[in-house]
Length: 508
Image 1 (cartoon, helix red, strand yellow):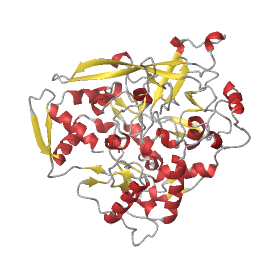
Image 2 (cartoon, one colour):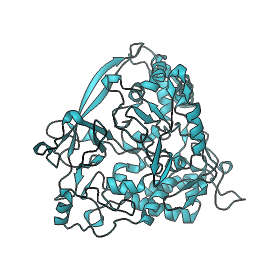
Image 3 (cartoon, one colour):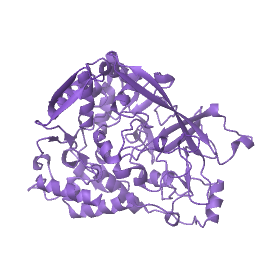
Image 4 (cartoon, one colour):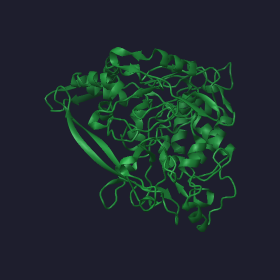
């Protein structure tokens, strides 16, 4: 990844991304010579590398200031560092490093598609790492006493994992109005190997009382820009995000964190105000810190098992300074430029039944797809342009990043909650998991920037919160509720427009 970062930095130099003469500690968009086939995605945080390290390159304002690069590099190292038993991992955990779940700062291929045990079901598997978070609650929203909010399906040697996830896929075939076939798959989750053996206690876990929501990692693209967003602009979006003709009405998720009540931006349901670095070390890796000083399995049998394996619980395992360096790294990641396509290279698309085909330049296809994106009203939720506040962003220990301020950005999201429906295949996207004000059927609009490079970076095209969509087309066709009108507008389009819209998504 470091070699790729140097390539990206060299490319930025060749593109004459230089420090503005009047300001020796930053750059402006006027300083950036944008290649003919690219478009700025995140102002001065835009990068122009589209290879396998596309998500894992520092923004130009990091590259051009040596002190910024030193701190970014330190955070990068900590992000990738694999925790071990001797450095605080466990006793139980969900991931062994930040990068284990976010390979290349992206979305590691989820175990619901890769791990399968002797039964042929997918999930945690008998061995190995799953790259998933498994949320468990009762139907009434109450946590199970001896598990908390997350089932930790991994553990260090000699310690019992809290349980194992099994996933069975159910597939159903459909057709577009013009006859084009497609299919959707719905995951059915079950938990096996509950460590507490609830079946032999007075508090058994009835499968009918269990809600299980699985989350695959989010891309860490545009995290700094998200944290620098002008909150007032988001609140005004919520005030006017009311399009009754399309059944759309977005709203903010208000949450209380660190004693502050404000809108959430981070997470699948906008349930956090920050990038959750401290929570990630604690809940995902079992690494104690100043905000979460207790082990995640405090009071459970895994504590004693960990002691028997040599774990000590007498000190915090990661410092606040180190966590802020990781926070700095996340804020300093650049956003890949949108790829407009060549004006000369031709692309031929064929109808699904091979009865027709059309050849256009890459630029023409992507331009057609952009027009179709607006025609389907996707932009009403996947808002194309937002702005960051003048002062930029502030890290978890108070370090300010003014270089993120005053930028026009293009995340393709309003960061608001929308009802995504409960009807498709009898369940829709309703996971029955409440986060802040967000109900089970409500999800934050996913930012689309960088989505077109996920195959290149992470080797897969699984989308949505649990990876059930195997490609962009399926992700669209899972839209219900407030997304129903746009889905139907897309489905009723001529096949060429549909293909072009998918090409446009691939350019982001």
